[in-house]
Length: 308
Image (cartoon, rainbow, N blue to C red; front, side, top):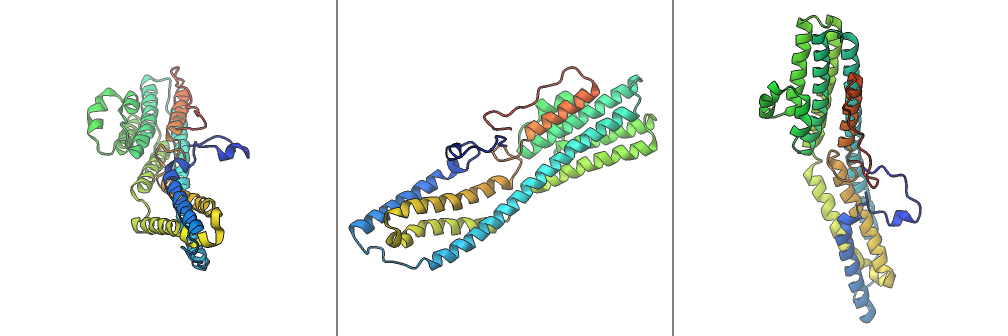
């Protein structure tokens, strides 16, 4: 995710990090080249492209803008919902840790081991969820927080975060049977686990349910056809200004199209997607610090304005 402050009036034209320009420059160059060719032909062979009313293109452009705006709103809503879910996960893991440290006797060896085991599993769940959403290998981040006797069964699990949540539930049940927690506190802590499970399910829903393909296809086709036909309609009236105007329109429409695709799946590593690595590290630091452990990693900081 881009975390830099707003660039000034000069830098805003040259900022590439976070811009969609690297993804659409080929389309813009093609439209600009096509516009230049039509302009040159019109200049050397007058009336090659007769004057057309721009009213149809105006109406199509308005309709296309509405379609692109609707799609961008839908993509941003998915992005914002995902950010809210990870904010909820931060809250739930901190609340779970506070309850475990407050209501399980840490002076007792069994109690201390139970606290550490469950809090470590909450950290492992956070890393496992991030890796599941990004399709990356979780074992380096997860195994160090899970007791070795569970490693074999953990690697066989099809849904690693859900497996870790079941393991947390089992630990909570063991705490109840050992009378480390009262019935009331068991219920409260189970509510935290349920909320974390809801976060998992909601993130999977966003990740596994893209916007309808037919709608995306309609917007793609309309955008390309509109930008390809635009130079032929404008060259008779705009002359040598046609390439510049067409390039600006192509940048706007293609840019909105690509930006909505990037925001549609908020869990990736693109510049405008969520910084899941940084949020996972924040949860890990907070929970290890609450446990009083000495080996606490550093915060993940932004590099060149980008936070992974």
